[in-house]
Image (cartoon, rainbow, N blue to C red; front, side):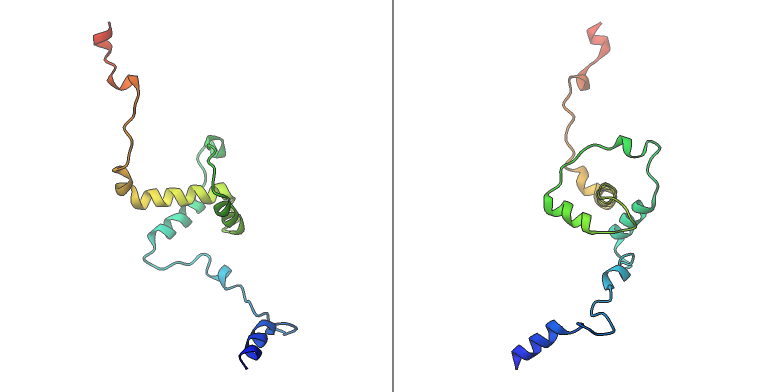
Length: 120
């Protein structure tokens, strides 16, 4: 009997008038929980136009293959993978900047201690 239920579950939707999957993921795409500020910021960054120079100011960053594939599977407002990555990182920084600040590296340059008066 258990096997019959599993087979029925597998065949449900075949040759039916209504599709078994109604695309619930797309309907919920733009919605988030009211308290999810990080998601709201992410969506706002996707809406914002790029800077004056646009994509010319972008640098290359390597992603793990599974992350890249997952982002490629997302169709959020027709934005490309780079736009999604930038929006994700910007929203993360906006929401966690105070926590990230404690990990900021000290700039190691010879110019940090340069005093023009002592080298004249």
